[in-house]
Length: 306
Image (cartoon, rainbow, N blue to C red; front, side, top):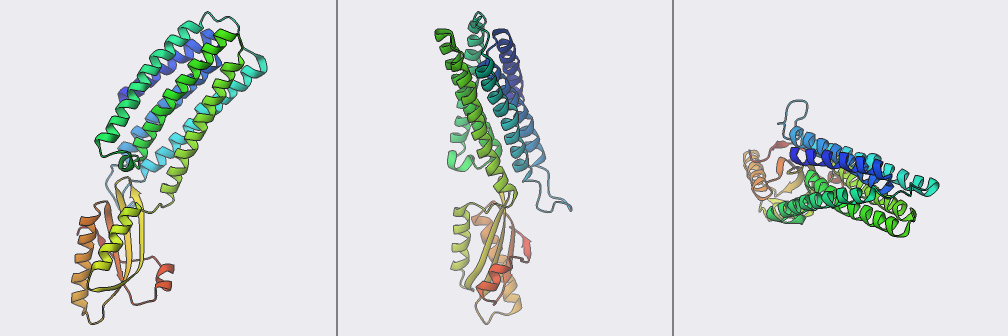
């Protein structure tokens, strides 16, 4: 990731220099895009490092949600530094026009061509990493990897839009093409920032675990001969690969306290084996009606796999 950060900084400097020399609003928009990408690399480095810290007394469920927080900051960075600046460049170009001296545009197009090759290669590597680790359905739930793929994809599309705008400006002499390219780049970045920010928000405020994991846990509980009914099941992501599970169950009558304890320990271990991401598992034995159980998710128990 440090290599990607260095590459983004070099690309941003080249785009900014070319944009100033050529007076190209589309190229300046792409320079802002690359600056936003560079800041996002910093955020993702922080997310990967801080989310690996072990649980402690102050944060007993660990620091896995750090990834969600830094992904939210990355989304804000894309919106502010990339989207808003691109809109500004497009509006300014439409309002005041642009320098009609196009001699610097050839150099600008060369810069964009090199950037397209670099960003395209980075996107292909990211997609290969996704496929190599089991496919998009499993790996794009990782906010860090999802942000990288979105960042590289929008970078390729943004460079393509900028090149089209610059070429049409050179051919027609109309700056409106570049202004439209800048506005399109801004709209693209705002949309990506919105999607990334919405997903990070859902995970920060307590998103449920994957529905498939929920289904497996519920099936396992219902298959236990000692369980009469599953009154309530609650799950929450506590990190990219960790989740909290709390279940309220009604046991069959006639079990003594020692037998109940043995059953509870066995069920927790079974859940931990069936759903590896279930790091904290709480099991509450109750004979209260499901209506009351749904109103009170608090549970007692032990750490999964104990």
